[in-house]
Image (cartoon, rainbow, N blue to C red):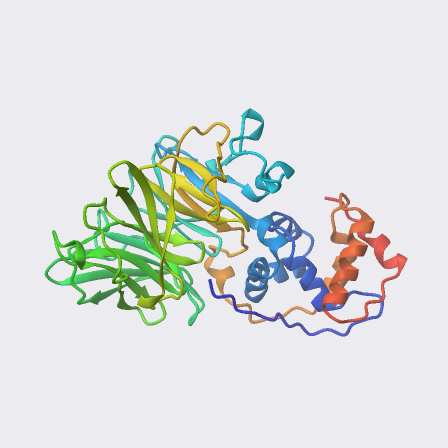
Length: 448
């Protein structure tokens, strides 16, 4: 994901007894979404700051600047195997236990079950319907509830849910679907498409910020799309398609460039061959596009082969990787640590070390025997409200925020913790910050 650095600017006349505005913003941008949602209730100026379009982007980008913030916000979200429940888990908290950091265990027992929380509010109206996870982008999930034609955008961190208006074309089922972010216009776009063998691909593009659909057509001809869900990477949505009905050599990656809303082809490696092997699947391997399939070596050993595109769009950058685990269906979840990658093996999860085939372990989830669709996403403040999504044209004086900061921090946070944090931030900003004991003590006046 391309990270853009955004500076939030405010007018203020700073007093020596209050915190500088950039320190305030730096502190808040490191906090969890749940805390910031509570802080909106402190005052109108704080609500305005936390809802500000530029601050939302600064807060989201902070996860890519600091690993501790990334681990705090990264979540595993998945459905049950029957797609009747939607769950999330803070997997980093679980994996960072000493037993895993020391790599001493290959299998976990009852005391090592991953804890998952059900996102029941997504389907609270009709409890027994099926839910499909389609895509993720900037903290938002694109879901579809079966028994209805509507698509839903969900922000699990803020518990917002938005039902998208019907597409201008009466698609009962789409050949392809995706969700991405257009950096050129600062807009989130949902894409649905239908393949017409004779007339190419017809796309319907929904823009969250305008709450409207548009129809675009492309003359790219193909026979079928191997998977409905598009892969979002570098401002493009990707699908693996076949140009012919029987010719395996006709497989190609088709991407929709969101900024130009144009279709382009990405060729597979000339060394790649899928003869006498199961159908290939397009996905993400860490931060790269990848294709994967099973290979039967000498008819006595099966392994999974990954082809990873190390440089996006460059055919010569395809690199082959192999996983020597005898499972029929294996894919990358999008989650990885310094030493291990979270792999999806059929309906189970497994942590695997690509540098050591013997270093892996199962990752069972408490109360969920089998998993269905799996995505990785980051908590964010991105709003589904049309008004709040717009850029704020009026900036509130930060002197008001300074007045609030002395009373708004939760009483559960130890005083010494905040002193250390503020001093570190002042060093990071290369500023001299004079904090008196009088300033610190004000942090305890207000309690949540």
